[in-house]
Length: 169
Image (cartoon, rainbow, N blue to C red; front, side, top):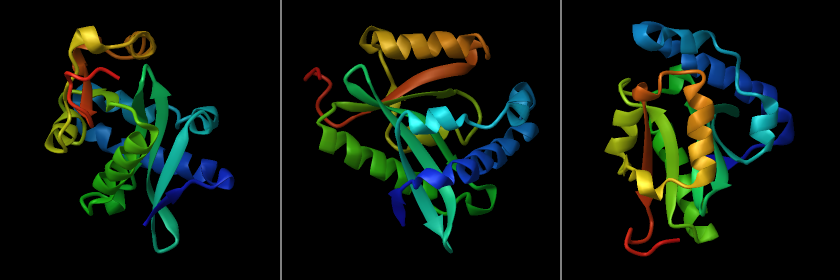
């Protein structure tokens, strides 16, 4: 079940996201990601958060923000013990529903290229590299902030169109 996040769930979502990042420990080039602080409550409050529930507890969430005429996936996380159960795909489905309801042309995101649960996973779900000339100023600023923390050559910008790419937003 996917539902809107409740205001009091912020700390639980922070813990879920921190636990989900633990898998980076086994990916040496990005192991430092596992030890980064959890997602800030302010970030969760700055967008739309959808939560996947299992047995009355959050098992995943997605944070969406309007950005440059698209809907940006600012964060997506699934609890380690719930990985591989379709929760991430359900959250992406909710994001697609939101994008259509808002009338935006695409979902966008930035992600790591290499770990199988990042770029390769999104590509299996229909995301493709976003052409550089389609990247708007807000997304470009997001990329610049990220480049201060991680090697930009390890990152990619992906999108999933809901309208024909020939029809600009």
